[in-house]
Image 1 (cartoon, helix red, strand yellow):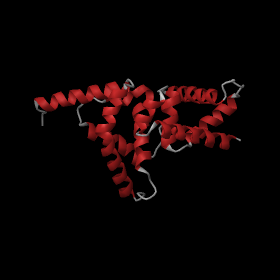
Image 2 (cartoon, one colour; image 1 turned 90 degrees about the vertical axis):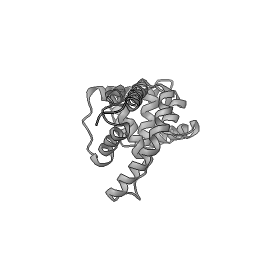
Image 3 (cartoon, one colour; image 1 turned 90 degrees about the horizontal axis):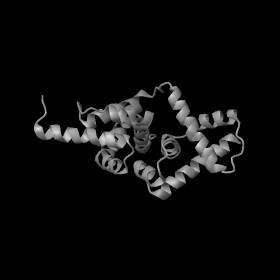
Image 4 (cartoon, helix red, strand yellow; image 1 turned 60 degrees about the horizontal axis):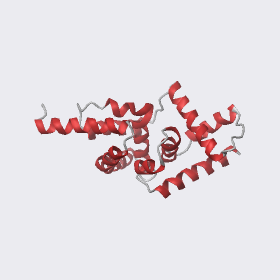
Length: 196
């Protein structure tokens, strides 16, 4: 059934919002999260309950993983949204992939380079003197970052890979600046302990 004029205008605005989010516009992300985060939390909780793992799974982790998927490859998924489906339906399909899919897609060379750059920035922040970190250690650190919970991986990705300032990253995570700082600190401590 064709959309009415009002609905077409609203859909065009939604496509523009997604494109602005892909460009890391903080105001767009604030609007996006206000519009879709509550529904995504409910949907992810429902999917986990339906899958029988509702008590173990944290909906926040699922939403964090969805946001990470949207930000992959410079926001390619966000840019790909064309408005043919409602944003809720489109995001629901991504949620299905995250919650039920479980299959990890192969990392492209671009993903590996971006991840390596993020790890290097993280290492430099930890050791500004720039001690010589061997290639094997960086590869091991990359593996450990992959094993972190989705929310921690997303925080690391937003700050170190995407280069977002901490206020914008905290807003994307739905957390305060202090909560993000604590999350990054815990992530670095866990990584340091695992690598010792």
